[in-house]
Amino acid sequence: MACDNKQAVDATTPSTETTSKPAADETIWHVKAISPEGKILDVKALDKDGKIFDVKAFPRNGDYHLMDIKAIKDGEKMPVKMLVSDDANIPVKAIGADGTIYDIKALTPEGTKIDVKGVGQVGNIIQVKAITGNENFGIKAISPEGHLYDVKGVKMLKDKVEGKINGVDFYAHIKGIPQVLTTNADSIWHIKAIHPSGKILDVKAIDASGNLNNVKAIAKGQDMHMMDIKAFIGGKVLPVKMLVSDDEHIPVKAIGEDGKIYDIKAITPEGEKLDVKGIRNQGNILQLKAISASGDLYGVKAISPSGSLMDVKGIKMVEDKVEMKVNGVDVYAHIKAIPMVMECGI
Image (cartoon, rainbow, N blue to C red):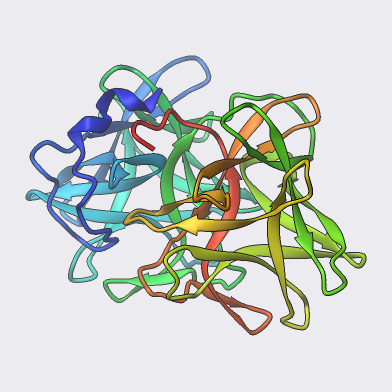
């Protein structure tokens, strides 16, 4: 679906979450508020004097799994985030290079300005809505060809402060993410590696005794936008992460409550154990692959009991080498099951 524009994006552009200029040939999606009745409102950034600026969605280095949401002022892109607040609904704002805060509003044809806020959190995902007294409008990113993505808050840390940009603490990222195409209510999905011949390989966590333990994708509260990947070892449900390393490929491991590390492997029908690793790139999204002895790369997917598929990817939200610590272990990137998009050249 998202491939139509992919050739227009320079995949060598360094990743950045700070203010930057759009490239002349960069793919730009529109950000709109859409009511259940089909009304469509522009979403804009406003300064303290009421001056209006565009809000757009941009793929990150050609990857469409997590699109950046930015406000554009004088040719500069400003990040849009949910800010730290004790309010019931979370303020959504653009942040200038000097730390100036810009309101994000949906604008009616009559000029009414409607607040855009974070409303309710399920797992990693926070709904983003334009809120009126009568109805709430969902926020979508729309491509020039009419493809729709959901615009959501994405929170990866348990801490109240997710990060700091231009001196401003923020609570959650705002991203454009593919719409979930499955209505399946399955909450636990299987993790498999897919051989090019069509063979399906189990992905398992291996304990100190060599036992094979299940690795699954788990939906929180039935939200399927971003499912956790967990290993089930010794009666415990353990996180699976990409670890900090200088290796060519990024190690993928389960982390015990005591900091113990467990290998994650794909198992062939003959019992051969293949490494599962992250493949480095310059965007938010890291490919997750099972690697054969000859160096062949097999994709890793989450498969529901009824046969629906999700991509399993590494997600890196900060530029620092260490994304976070889990049970004392430095983590390079999260691993999540996320909706599939067409991937050109990957």
